[in-house]
Amino acid sequence: EVQLVESGGGLVQPGRSLRLSCAASGFTFSSYWMHWVRQAPGKGLVWVSLIKTDGVSTNYADSVKGRFTISRDNAKNTLYLQMNSLRVEDTAVYYCARENIAVIPAVDLWGRGTLVTVSS
Amino acid sequence: SYELTQPPSVSVSPGQTATITCSGDRLGDRFACWYQQMPGQSPVLVIYQDTKRPSGIPERFSGSNSGNTATLTISGTQAVDEADYYCQAWDSQDVVFGGGTKLTVL
Image: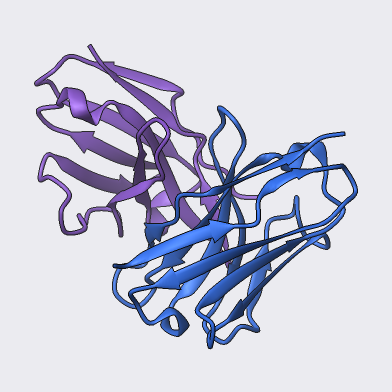
């Protein structure tokens, strides 16, 4: 089955760190660009970060630049998001998403999300 | 930074046509796509490259993009189409989402 499964969310205090993981299965993970997208409770979708197939080319939203790091392990079919210096406003469901740039230039596969709550 | 603006809500009667707009500076010069998100669910792609439907998306979903506005049209709207809809485009190497539109079918 083609799917993305996020993990690593939870309750964390402001200023602390958390690492999210996203396990991909059912497709050739190394061939796709990957995103992290978040959604605060009751709010809209907000793009967080992108990593291309080479694992070196990355982009970040201004709100997380310098605090979050996206990475991937193509051998393990896994995407990561290292989140440092977390803030209350980082509270959200974090979705892992696949960009099918070669066929359908859009996000054509989403995970179910993992909830990150930043609170003291 | 680039911004995409959507109306917060749109209402439509069953069987009628729903139109959801997405506005951005010269948006027609970029490709737009649309996602549907049911309550408690992950988003689903319904339109990409302005007008194309992924496999499995009903024909009643269509899109257009010209000038400063992209439009998602749902013809013969059904109760099952009640959801939040988000437009999305690229700004250089960054992804931008619209604020979302809640479609109510009543």
